[in-house]
Image (cartoon, helix red, strand yellow):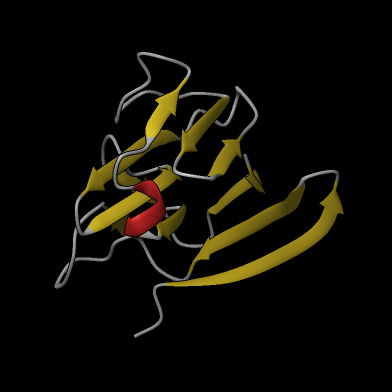
Length: 137
């Protein structure tokens, strides 16, 4: 059963000392659906998430200082041992952050369902855009 149709546009460019990805997505609900941040059997949608190399990011630091899961930052960086990943979003989008730097699972995501479920009616659109910077430090 189709839950939604998704169109993605992903581009990357090299900048001094970093790579910059722009990730745009539009979801169109194929039926009435409640999106949640959970695993099967529910319909889950997390926005944009990156699993990070544990050997680089397990002792990493999140900045700005005080930024934690549940915040809705316009930019957030995860600085590891020799590398840094930064997510950026428009303030109006206000997707929530989920971050983990457990010993075996370093992960960072921004998504519309990281705080609460999101109900979409059939044919309703959800558009998101993120900028991701990855570079050596």
